[in-house]
View 1 (cartoon, rainbow, N blue to C red):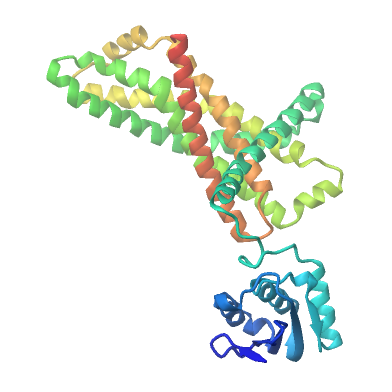
View 2 (cartoon, helix red, strand yellow; view 1 turned 30 degrees about the vertical axis):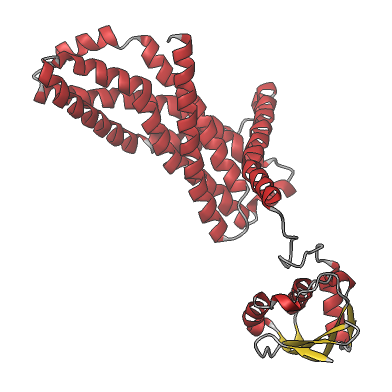
Length: 384
């Protein structure tokens, strides 16, 4: 009988008889403290030992201990050697070890030899799998938007079901508590934009056109975008953290047990509150951003406030103002739904909540930019 070992492996050796019958002889304690080393040994199994569909028996006479995780590694080793773990004969196992191995085998999916858990795919199949996996978050988000729309439609039919107290609290957090940071950021953006404009238009003696640049830019583009990005980082991430923590503490399970819908109790008040708050925050951003431009125009271009405001009335029409305001509730709805969905999708551990909170900010900012681009294309096509 021919004997094979993987770098003098102390955990198993593979015997092959003249008739090709293979016996995998296990040894030692396949327990938690040794699993990392065993896993490394399995990864180093030589190609010569991998014989797909060749008969194999597993001999457990040398085992001194085995946990369920060790049994899972044993089945993975069998798969790497080229045999289906669920159809492999086991011999000389103690009753306890046999019970553990059988229990784990019953819960194992069909596995291929190359991956130890999933059949190896070709390039085209793997590309397709990764493409479908990439579209899965989009499909989940679409389903969540549909569920939120249905819940909102229910509230339209029965307004009395709106949780007014929760809605008020969320408006306070999303609007009143956000006003200081929104005011500071949009003021600074207005100052920066005006300062950059001032440096260029002074060369051509077109000082008054600073009003056109700052006013239209703030009302139509900059204020909605900056406010949405700040709200995504502040409020959207807070929604994910709050709902994720509730899931971690099993509070959402308690709501369901009491017969309450998480959509009605948690999601709808937050979405509705942010949809109400965002247009007001954008309006504040318009005002303070233009105020920042007025300050720079007065200090660097000697344009008086009266002249600035007079020109502002001429060039910044209601059309520009309403386009910026119209973006706000759409941005808000997407930010709130992304934040709530990622909170509900969090696992029951702190690491998952942290990852989902980060993902909320990234997804929200990307969504805001894509929506703003769509608005720009639509406005250009419609000539507004």
